[in-house]
Length: 269
Image (tube, rainbow, N blue to C red):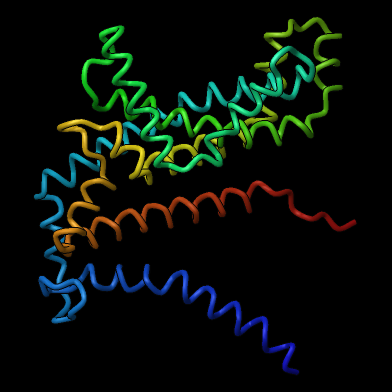
C-alpha cells in the first residue's frame, strides 16, 4: 500500500517544484501592485506597459532574429557534420573532427564566450572583420554551440536509417543528389525540425555567451531581463514571460493535436 502511494506523491511533489514558480509568475503578471511579490488586486495594466516599453520589445525582436538565424545556420552545419560522421566512418582526422563537433556540449559557457571574444578581437585586429561586436558576432557564437546539438540529434536519426531505401532509389535511376533530397531528407525531416527547434530555444535562452560577444545596442532579451533583475524586477517582465509561456503552451498543444491526428486509426477486422 505504501509503495502504491509513493510514486504519485513523488510525482506530484516533483511537478509542483517545477511548475509552481511558473504558475505564480503568470498569476503575479496580473497584479496591480508595483511590487512583484505583493498582491494588491487584479489588473492587466502591466501588459499595456510592456507594449509601451521599447527596450523590452526591441530586445525580444533582436533575440528572435538571432535565434532564427543561429538555428538555421546550425541546422545546415550540424546536418553536414552528422552525415560526415555517420556515412564516412573512416577518414583522416575523424576522431579529431568528432571531438571538435561535440566539444561545445561539455564546454562551460564562460570558457566558450571568452574564447569567442578573444577570437573576434584577434580577427578584427588582423583582418578588420568583424568591425565591433553586435548581432553578427552573437549569431556566429550561437551557431557555433547550436551546431553541436543539431549534429547529435541528426546523427542519432541517421544511425538508424535504412540505407536500402537510398539504394533502391539509385537503382531506379536517381542521382545521389536527388536521392538525398527526395528520399533521405523527407525521412530525417523530424530530426531536422527537432534540431532547429532545439537550436532556436538554446539561442533564445542564452545569457552568458551573448554577454561576452555582444556590443552596444545589441542586448538580447535575457541580457535585458538580467539587468532588470539586478536593479529590481518590474511586473512588465512577468507579463512578457507569461506571453512567452502562453505561446510555448499553444505550440506544444498544436503539435500534440497534429501528432494525434496523424496517427492511423485502429482498424478492427
